[in-house]
Image (cartoon, rainbow, N blue to C red; front, top):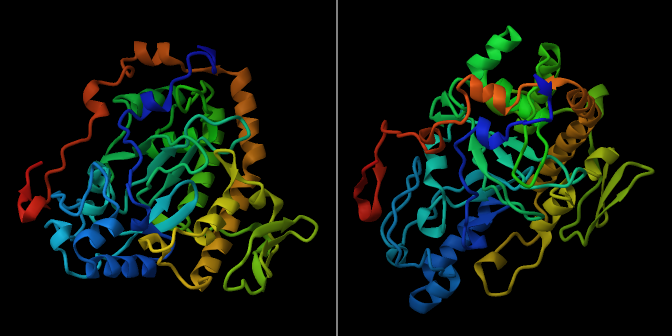
Length: 402
């Protein structure tokens, strides 16, 4: 045993299979509302020839003539988009960057790098951990978790990697270094599950130029405290998914709309005296300061969220097709986001207490894990597992062989 910060393993060693962020290639395929996506698709399909290609915004990876397989689990066309005349595929809800949720047209023909291996394992048992890239100590969390498939984008910083908790659908085969749960179970004298390891990483993970570092304590009691804290953070971030309850502030407090958000709010600001969030002439309170000050990648999350819904788009593009004014559903989403950020902010002190105890305690480092045969993880653990329980349609309607 040695100081816990010595030889602390990387998340990349503990959860070896990771996938790069999605690369859309064209921003119009994603939007904060599903209606805009359907309008954009209809506008694209009505266009022909050079006009369709201009609206599409071709790249080296995708043009209207590209022939690609369908995304796993999605019933979308696989014929060339240049010949497409059907209705818009049903948009799906995605985790967009840290803490935002938006809609995507799940059509492989529109996406430069859709990461099919992620779609293949996305189901109601899956959790996705997203590294936020190298962050400064006060830049915000280095790790977030979503039940929705994430795009992995980082509008305020360098994008990190996406790590599914399970390698196969149905919560089968944890994406962990083989033998890690058994090794920790033996050390702590209590069962250690994949979700507990992820919860610990939410509490203890710190940023570094090499990626998220996850110190492992040798103290069973500190482990338990860190896991319980991480499980609270996990439930908050999941926002009711996987059977959990929607996040709520303690004591019956909840943010309310005190003055309606106007159709085109000119900006977003905060009044700390009255805990009031201002969206133009709209007013929401109480909004705890911890929610307003919450950052990810060094940028304020609420400002990023607001900008993605109000920033101007280039005229005569598909991105310019958007709601004429503020949507009621955005207000509901904002109230939930405020609550989520406030609750996560309240955990900061407890998380810092665990990290301080880590710095002065003993830990389980790479040497111990190597001696136990846990590290390094075999090369196969860094590759996606074979998923052979369903057919996938390949280009031009052919079945894909996996």
